[in-house]
Image (cartoon, rainbow, N blue to C red; front, side):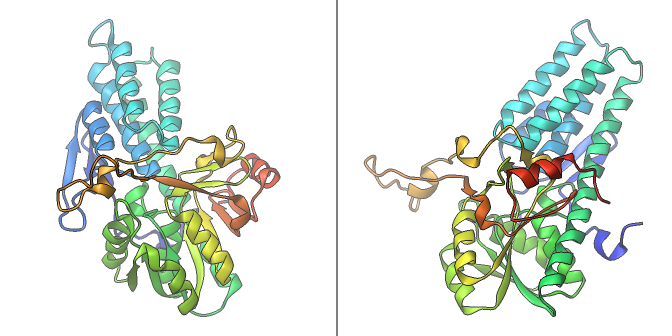
Length: 358
């Protein structure tokens, strides 16, 4: 049985109850806890599209439940029921087509639908599949947390100061979190003195969400202006930069929240170890290196609107969502299958052949 100290649930973003998926609206945090009950796949697609739910794993889990609801709604109600479910899956895919986890899970659910379409118990089967996807993600998070705290303990004794970026916590996953799961577990094992979280523009995922998550457990956290992180590494005894990932290329390049790259460069300069924590399903072996991706950008108005007024048509903006951290800046990649030190193409290929070690 997994260590109760690690597995205690404090924050969650997705609940499945009575045939509906309930989504914690992350747009409302930290001011209000608003739960959105979704009973149709189109409602889940809207929640994904509007960023009510965010984080690749959490989005994928919600989509799996949405497919289950679609099957239950349409199953054998008409001759076109199968096409109706496929249409809902296509709408879910289009809600955030750049989210790798979403596409993977929907491909899996589509395969299950096609394989068992003649089964009388198809609705129950698809619901069980969605529940299993949710539970597997949470179990993977707990495995990563154990590997991560093993690294922290191995490299330095005593309570340490850690830095994180974005929100790779329970809000972004099926529970506990990836990067923030390691941070949370390290605190519970008394390995951490203080957490520093960057505000993480443009959506302030660090100051709005990560700081809120940590505060729920009374973990000491300091929000850092994005432009002050390098200065803080110079001034304070930070030992680890712990990052999540949206996708990992076959050579170990990491696609992460914008700002991850410059933080990793600063960490190398200041002797801060870089730990990337991500499920192995984020590793895209068809992507040779990170620069092959066209990275998503957000609206220019988020940068150019001042007190409701624009700066004028001649002013351009660069407002990317993600950046790419080269593999040679990463000290450790932590997955539920194990730890890879100084990741590269050969080591990742070996990792993907492993069975889970827990």
